[in-house]
Length: 125
Image (cartoon, rainbow, N blue to C red; front, side, top):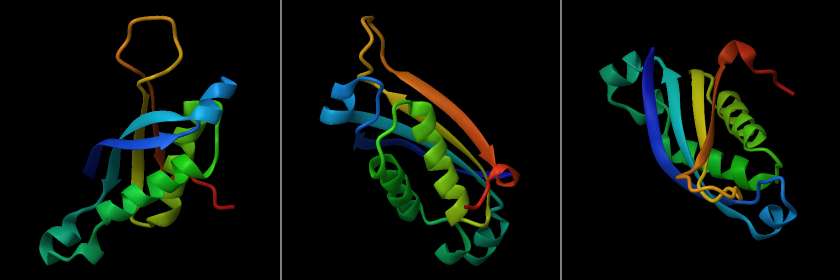
């Protein structure tokens, strides 16, 4: 399977267990790996035959800012679900959701979750 990668997408959102996280918000950083067959766009050189990267970023921003979640696990799931629903040619998506300012009393770069979801695992509501 071919892959499209978008790394370091920054989104300001309101996710967290603590009330202040949901009130004040904080930055999040996402890396996305989209599993898709790129044979056709490689031949045609047409954007409509692939997944539009700008649209992906819009979907991710909407998923991250549309609701407030206590867990970044849940936010990552929402991102993956929305992408799989929007793009029929998307077979698999990996979402790495990083939280650089997690309220943990420790010296760390960031905490993160990584989830991978496949087309057969998506349920349409």
